[in-house]
Length: 256
Image (tube, rainbow, N blue to C red; front, side, top):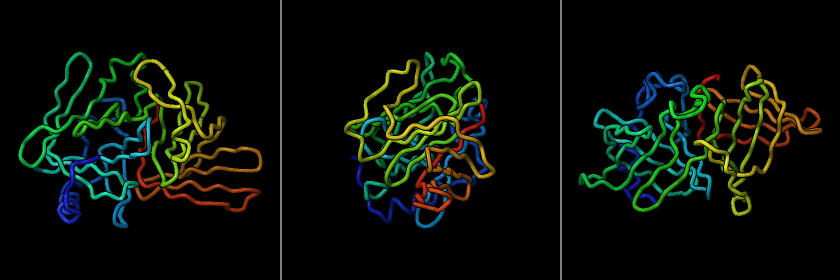
């Protein structure tokens, strides 16, 4: 999967690859998603992330940290149980609306790439409310990142990926993509750079709250809360809490 590193070495570099939350991540300046921010919970602490990738196929939920002062990033797949891996990030290489960052190992050998699309290539650039990263490729493996325009929140728990989007008219939509359903969820050809699948749960007509969003499905209410301090999904039935799922990683999108 990822290039192996010892847990101790990877976690040491992980701490180095964690600038302040106020830092502007690579490729954000001047973009519609400039004010979006990603976070992940690791070692009992919430740390900044460059971006979060919830792959369209499979359950290899991936977190990539911002580069440290030496240009090193950490790539982690928290659900896999494997130690994070560290790579050196190359300079952005833009061209024809595409942006590539090379990934190199400790010997300087290129072992992969991160790919993003220039928001100017989208029909409505303002719909790019979260980073426009579409895939990560490392050592021959590729993860196609789930991406929808006008995303207000995207992240994952141990059981599922979740997305909250806002339609041009203001209608909110909550979708979950359960890990246990990965084999049966079908890819949707949405056009443009959007890439996703059918959902395990799809609810429309939610409302914004002080902490996030609320959606209803019959007797059930789904409260999705997210901030730089943490994020979780709380499911209530008849006002009583049925279950609570903390998000392991999440991106708070800019309001379209």
